[in-house]
Image (cartoon, rainbow, N blue to C red; front, side, top):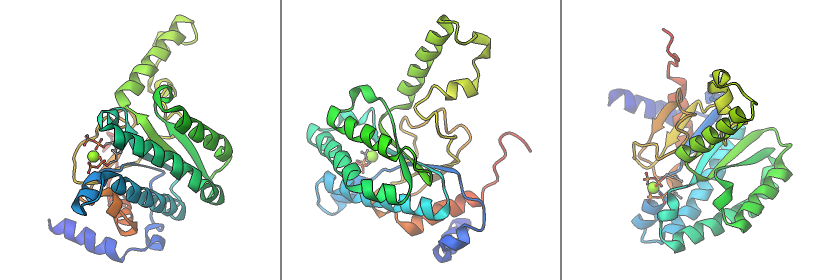
Length: 253
Ligand code: IPE
Ligand code: IPE
Ligand code: MG
Protein backbone atom coordinates (compact mmCIF):
# COMPACT_ATOMS: atom_id res chain seq x y z
CA UNK A 1 0.00 0.00 0.00
CA UNK A 2 2.82 2.31 0.96
CA UNK A 3 4.74 1.52 -2.22
CA UNK A 4 1.60 2.09 -4.27
CA UNK A 5 1.08 5.60 -2.81
CA UNK A 6 4.73 6.42 -3.50
CA UNK A 7 4.32 5.32 -7.10
CA UNK A 8 1.23 7.45 -7.45
CA UNK A 9 2.97 10.40 -5.92
CA UNK A 10 6.03 10.13 -8.14
CA UNK A 11 4.00 9.55 -11.28
CA UNK A 12 1.96 12.67 -10.59
CA UNK A 13 5.00 14.89 -10.91
CA UNK A 14 6.53 12.93 -13.78
CA UNK A 15 6.54 14.55 -17.17
CA UNK A 16 6.98 13.07 -20.62
CA UNK A 17 10.57 14.34 -20.64
CA UNK A 18 11.34 12.63 -17.34
CA UNK A 19 9.81 9.32 -18.46
CA UNK A 20 11.92 9.48 -21.62
CA UNK A 21 15.15 9.47 -19.64
CA UNK A 22 14.69 5.73 -18.95
CA UNK A 23 13.95 3.07 -21.59
CA UNK A 24 10.29 2.99 -22.58
CA UNK A 25 8.51 -0.15 -23.79
CA UNK A 26 8.73 -0.81 -27.52
CA UNK A 27 5.23 -2.30 -27.63
CA UNK A 28 2.29 -1.47 -25.36
CA UNK A 29 -0.97 -3.42 -25.56
CA UNK A 30 -4.15 -2.17 -23.90
CA UNK A 31 -7.40 -3.87 -22.90
CA UNK A 32 -9.53 -0.73 -23.04
CA UNK A 33 -12.24 -1.75 -20.59
CA UNK A 34 -14.89 0.15 -18.62
CA UNK A 35 -16.68 2.25 -21.24
CA UNK A 36 -20.11 0.88 -20.30
CA UNK A 37 -19.63 1.51 -16.58
CA UNK A 38 -18.32 5.02 -17.30
CA UNK A 39 -21.56 5.78 -19.17
CA UNK A 40 -23.82 4.07 -16.60
CA UNK A 41 -22.32 6.19 -13.81
CA UNK A 42 -23.52 9.24 -15.70
CA UNK A 43 -26.90 7.86 -16.72
CA UNK A 44 -25.78 7.82 -20.36
CA UNK A 45 -26.21 5.12 -23.00
CA UNK A 46 -23.27 2.67 -23.27
CA UNK A 47 -22.39 4.09 -26.66
CA UNK A 48 -21.58 7.45 -25.07
CA UNK A 49 -18.93 5.58 -23.07
CA UNK A 50 -17.49 4.03 -26.21
CA UNK A 51 -17.37 7.46 -27.85
CA UNK A 52 -15.52 8.90 -24.87
CA UNK A 53 -13.20 5.89 -25.00
CA UNK A 54 -12.11 6.88 -28.51
CA UNK A 55 -10.73 10.13 -27.02
CA UNK A 56 -8.61 8.12 -24.57
CA UNK A 57 -7.24 6.09 -27.46
CA UNK A 58 -6.38 9.25 -29.40
CA UNK A 59 -4.61 10.46 -26.31
CA UNK A 60 -2.69 7.18 -25.93
CA UNK A 61 -1.61 7.37 -29.59
CA UNK A 62 -0.27 10.89 -29.07
CA UNK A 63 1.60 9.82 -25.91
CA UNK A 64 3.16 6.83 -27.66
CA UNK A 65 4.42 9.20 -30.35
CA UNK A 66 5.77 11.65 -27.78
CA UNK A 67 7.48 8.90 -25.77
CA UNK A 68 8.92 7.02 -28.73
CA UNK A 69 6.84 3.86 -28.19
CA UNK A 70 6.81 2.12 -31.58
CA UNK A 71 3.81 -0.27 -31.33
CA UNK A 72 0.42 0.16 -29.67
CA UNK A 73 -2.14 -2.66 -29.77
CA UNK A 74 -5.65 -1.61 -28.77
CA UNK A 75 -8.30 -4.23 -27.94
CA UNK A 76 -11.32 -2.65 -29.57
CA UNK A 77 -13.77 -5.52 -30.09
CA UNK A 78 -13.36 -9.15 -29.09
CA UNK A 79 -14.71 -12.18 -30.91
CA UNK A 80 -16.95 -12.63 -27.84
CA UNK A 81 -18.36 -9.08 -28.00
CA UNK A 82 -20.82 -10.20 -30.72
CA UNK A 83 -22.85 -11.59 -27.81
CA UNK A 84 -23.82 -8.03 -26.83
CA UNK A 85 -27.18 -6.46 -27.77
CA UNK A 86 -27.46 -5.78 -31.50
CA UNK A 87 -27.80 -2.02 -31.08
CA UNK A 88 -24.53 -1.80 -29.11
CA UNK A 89 -22.69 -3.94 -31.67
CA UNK A 90 -24.09 -1.88 -34.53
CA UNK A 91 -23.22 1.37 -32.75
CA UNK A 92 -19.65 0.16 -32.18
CA UNK A 93 -19.20 -0.83 -35.84
CA UNK A 94 -20.48 2.59 -36.87
CA UNK A 95 -18.10 4.23 -34.39
CA UNK A 96 -15.09 2.29 -35.76
CA UNK A 97 -16.00 3.36 -39.28
CA UNK A 98 -16.51 7.02 -38.34
CA UNK A 99 -13.34 7.19 -36.23
CA UNK A 100 -11.04 5.74 -38.86
CA UNK A 101 -12.52 8.10 -41.48
CA UNK A 102 -12.25 11.17 -39.24
CA UNK A 103 -8.72 10.39 -38.03
CA UNK A 104 -7.04 9.64 -41.35
CA UNK A 105 -5.52 13.10 -41.77
CA UNK A 106 -4.16 13.07 -38.21
CA UNK A 107 -2.74 9.55 -38.67
CA UNK A 108 -0.88 10.68 -41.79
CA UNK A 109 0.38 13.84 -40.10
CA UNK A 110 1.73 11.84 -37.16
CA UNK A 111 3.19 8.96 -39.17
CA UNK A 112 0.87 6.31 -37.71
CA UNK A 113 0.51 3.02 -39.55
CA UNK A 114 -2.81 1.22 -38.99
CA UNK A 115 -2.90 -2.58 -38.90
CA UNK A 116 -6.12 -4.53 -38.40
CA UNK A 117 -5.55 -7.49 -36.11
CA UNK A 118 -8.46 -9.93 -36.00
CA UNK A 119 -10.61 -12.30 -38.01
CA UNK A 120 -11.36 -10.38 -41.20
CA UNK A 121 -13.85 -12.97 -42.46
CA UNK A 122 -16.69 -11.87 -40.18
CA UNK A 123 -16.15 -8.10 -39.92
CA UNK A 124 -18.98 -6.19 -41.68
CA UNK A 125 -17.92 -5.41 -45.26
CA UNK A 126 -18.17 -1.63 -44.94
CA UNK A 127 -16.01 -1.53 -41.80
CA UNK A 128 -13.48 -4.00 -43.21
CA UNK A 129 -13.08 -2.01 -46.41
CA UNK A 130 -12.52 1.21 -44.45
CA UNK A 131 -9.77 -0.46 -42.40
CA UNK A 132 -8.15 -2.16 -45.38
CA UNK A 133 -8.12 1.13 -47.35
CA UNK A 134 -6.57 2.84 -44.33
CA UNK A 135 -3.95 0.09 -44.02
CA UNK A 136 -2.90 0.73 -47.61
CA UNK A 137 -2.83 4.54 -47.23
CA UNK A 138 -0.85 4.44 -43.96
CA UNK A 139 1.42 1.50 -44.78
CA UNK A 140 4.58 3.58 -45.29
CA UNK A 141 4.18 5.50 -42.02
CA UNK A 142 7.02 4.76 -39.63
CA UNK A 143 6.50 6.64 -36.40
CA UNK A 144 4.04 4.28 -34.69
CA UNK A 145 2.26 1.05 -35.60
CA UNK A 146 -1.29 1.11 -34.26
CA UNK A 147 -2.69 -2.41 -34.21
CA UNK A 148 -6.46 -2.30 -33.92
CA UNK A 149 -7.63 -5.62 -32.46
CA UNK A 150 -11.13 -5.91 -33.90
CA UNK A 151 -13.07 -9.14 -34.01
CA UNK A 152 -10.03 -10.49 -32.21
CA UNK A 153 -9.90 -13.68 -30.17
CA UNK A 154 -6.59 -15.19 -29.15
CA UNK A 155 -7.70 -18.82 -29.06
CA UNK A 156 -9.20 -18.49 -32.55
CA UNK A 157 -5.98 -16.83 -33.74
CA UNK A 158 -3.92 -19.75 -32.38
CA UNK A 159 -6.24 -22.33 -33.98
CA UNK A 160 -5.96 -20.57 -37.35
CA UNK A 161 -2.17 -20.59 -37.00
CA UNK A 162 -2.18 -24.32 -36.17
CA UNK A 163 -4.28 -25.00 -39.29
CA UNK A 164 -1.84 -22.96 -41.39
CA UNK A 165 1.13 -24.86 -39.93
CA UNK A 166 -0.59 -28.17 -40.76
CA UNK A 167 -1.16 -27.06 -44.35
CA UNK A 168 2.46 -25.95 -44.72
CA UNK A 169 3.68 -29.24 -43.24
CA UNK A 170 1.40 -31.23 -45.55
CA UNK A 171 2.74 -29.29 -48.55
CA UNK A 172 6.32 -29.94 -47.38
CA UNK A 173 6.89 -26.19 -46.92
CA UNK A 174 8.05 -26.79 -43.34
CA UNK A 175 9.48 -29.85 -41.60
CA UNK A 176 7.48 -30.61 -38.46
CA UNK A 177 10.73 -30.68 -36.42
CA UNK A 178 11.46 -27.12 -37.50
CA UNK A 179 8.20 -25.71 -36.10
CA UNK A 180 9.30 -23.49 -33.22
CA UNK A 181 7.99 -20.40 -31.44
CA UNK A 182 9.57 -18.03 -33.97
CA UNK A 183 7.94 -19.83 -36.89
CA UNK A 184 4.60 -20.01 -35.07
CA UNK A 185 4.61 -16.28 -34.19
CA UNK A 186 4.82 -15.52 -37.89
CA UNK A 187 1.48 -17.27 -38.45
CA UNK A 188 -0.40 -15.05 -36.00
CA UNK A 189 -2.38 -11.87 -36.81
CA UNK A 190 0.35 -9.94 -34.96
CA UNK A 191 3.16 -11.33 -37.14
CA UNK A 192 4.62 -7.91 -37.91
CA UNK A 193 4.89 -6.74 -34.30
CA UNK A 194 7.25 -7.83 -31.54
CA UNK A 195 5.62 -9.24 -28.39
CA UNK A 196 4.19 -6.57 -26.08
CA UNK A 197 6.53 -5.38 -23.34
CA UNK A 198 3.65 -3.99 -21.32
CA UNK A 199 -0.01 -4.99 -21.14
CA UNK A 200 -2.41 -2.52 -19.52
CA UNK A 201 -5.97 -3.37 -18.46
CA UNK A 202 -8.28 -0.66 -17.17
CA UNK A 203 -11.51 -0.81 -15.13
CA UNK A 204 -10.38 -2.99 -12.22
CA UNK A 205 -10.84 -6.37 -13.90
CA UNK A 206 -7.97 -8.81 -13.39
CA UNK A 207 -8.35 -10.99 -16.45
CA UNK A 208 -7.07 -11.28 -20.00
CA UNK A 209 -10.38 -11.95 -21.81
CA UNK A 210 -8.90 -13.88 -24.74
CA UNK A 211 -6.34 -11.20 -25.65
CA UNK A 212 -2.84 -12.01 -27.00
CA UNK A 213 -2.47 -15.22 -24.97
CA UNK A 214 0.59 -16.34 -26.93
CA UNK A 215 2.19 -12.91 -27.25
CA UNK A 216 2.09 -11.87 -23.56
CA UNK A 217 4.13 -14.84 -22.30
CA UNK A 218 6.74 -12.42 -20.87
CA UNK A 219 4.88 -9.09 -20.90
CA UNK A 220 4.74 -6.96 -17.79
CA UNK A 221 1.13 -6.61 -16.60
CA UNK A 222 -0.42 -3.40 -15.29
CA UNK A 223 -3.94 -3.25 -13.90
CA UNK A 224 -5.73 -0.09 -12.86
CA UNK A 225 -9.16 0.73 -11.44
CA UNK A 226 -9.47 3.70 -13.80
CA UNK A 227 -12.22 3.26 -16.39
CA UNK A 228 -10.94 3.54 -19.97
CA UNK A 229 -12.66 6.87 -20.78
CA UNK A 230 -10.95 8.38 -17.71
CA UNK A 231 -7.52 6.99 -18.65
CA UNK A 232 -5.65 10.14 -19.59
CA UNK A 233 -2.03 11.37 -19.74
CA UNK A 234 -1.31 11.01 -16.01
CA UNK A 235 -2.60 7.42 -15.98
CA UNK A 236 -0.60 6.48 -19.06
CA UNK A 237 2.62 7.95 -17.65
CA UNK A 238 1.96 6.14 -14.38
CA UNK A 239 1.71 2.81 -16.26
CA UNK A 240 4.97 3.47 -18.12
CA UNK A 241 6.67 4.54 -14.91
CA UNK A 242 5.53 1.32 -13.23
CA UNK A 243 7.00 -0.64 -16.17
CA UNK A 244 10.29 1.22 -15.80
CA UNK A 245 10.49 0.11 -12.15
CA UNK A 246 10.19 -3.59 -13.04
CA UNK A 247 13.05 -6.06 -13.29
CA UNK A 248 12.46 -8.25 -16.34
CA UNK A 249 14.33 -11.52 -16.04
CA UNK A 250 12.98 -13.84 -18.75
CA UNK A 251 13.89 -16.82 -16.60
CA UNK A 252 17.45 -15.67 -15.94
CA UNK A 253 18.71 -14.59 -12.51
C1 IPE B 1 -14.81 -1.95 -23.36
O1 IPE B 1 -15.76 -1.42 -22.51
C2 IPE B 1 -15.17 -1.76 -24.81
C3 IPE B 1 -15.60 -2.97 -25.51
C4 IPE B 1 -15.61 -4.16 -24.99
C5 IPE B 1 -16.06 -2.81 -26.86
P1 IPE B 1 -17.03 -2.24 -22.05
O2 IPE B 1 -18.13 -1.98 -23.03
O3 IPE B 1 -16.70 -3.66 -21.85
O4 IPE B 1 -17.38 -1.55 -20.69
P2 IPE B 1 -17.85 -2.26 -19.34
O5 IPE B 1 -16.84 -3.31 -19.03
O6 IPE B 1 -19.21 -2.83 -19.61
O7 IPE B 1 -17.87 -1.16 -18.33
C1 IPE C 1 -12.46 -7.10 -23.35
O1 IPE C 1 -13.42 -6.49 -22.55
C2 IPE C 1 -12.65 -6.70 -24.78
C3 IPE C 1 -12.32 -5.31 -25.10
C4 IPE C 1 -11.85 -4.42 -24.28
C5 IPE C 1 -12.55 -4.94 -26.47
P1 IPE C 1 -14.78 -7.23 -22.17
O2 IPE C 1 -15.56 -6.25 -21.37
O3 IPE C 1 -15.43 -7.79 -23.37
O4 IPE C 1 -14.26 -8.43 -21.27
P2 IPE C 1 -15.03 -9.29 -20.16
O5 IPE C 1 -16.31 -9.77 -20.78
O6 IPE C 1 -15.30 -8.36 -19.03
O7 IPE C 1 -14.08 -10.36 -19.79
MG1 MG D 1 -16.00 -4.71 -20.26
